[in-house]
Length: 300
Image (cartoon, rainbow, N blue to C red; front, side, top):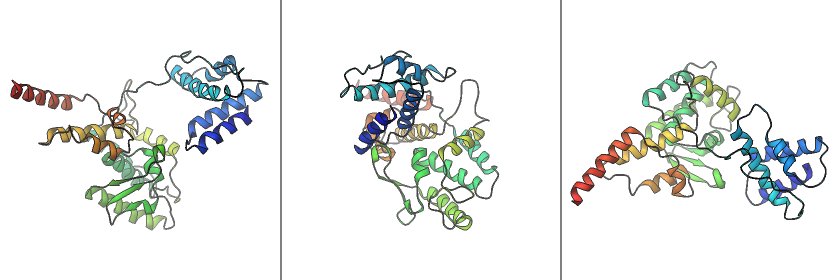
């Protein structure tokens, strides 16, 4: 099974798919299959048994694992008709929209203040600047962590986000206040790690890994977390999108003809992807209600 999975991943990646997390899951599935002594084509029983591991995991996680194996099974079935494709909804839906945490200005300030108190020579400035950049640009965390020193163009006042989702590269203009913060961090990083290649680095001058960032962010969000509330780094992107729309909607031009601009800024291939980040905030809905009443009054 390992050989079949490696061949499948090589084929898909040659077509431009990265398959990072999916690839790791499929290799884990293949190791499980081979170590359990399974021989022959992929079966439903094998797929479901592996997908339901670990036993303590959420059913959503099991469903996601099964979905990954189903894709592999459909590929293998092309050349091996005896391949069994596992049913889709054994564990329920594989995707569920998590309720985003929309940060207020005060909560955002709390996160930034916590970052400033982190130990280390460069770490507090790294995390303060990183989280600040996510808040004011809506970048994906993966995009920010991949930024190289040369990708931050201070002369033009923009970021070069290279080969992001779907391997797209885009330019992200920066507000002057964001440029000032990045310049200040760049000077400090240059003093601590003059040979660093990544823009955001650890105290040792190495690029930051997502696991490290997620662990530290879990500490920073602790004052905000409550029952059933676990703010995520990705929620900063949701917050940015909602606040921009809210600001536009409150302006004289409105937001109706500007969502496409926001979509391109966020790096979305289709405007429908941007709608995923728009939420019914009280202020946003109040503004929308007022505009509707005004429209209805003028129309009548």
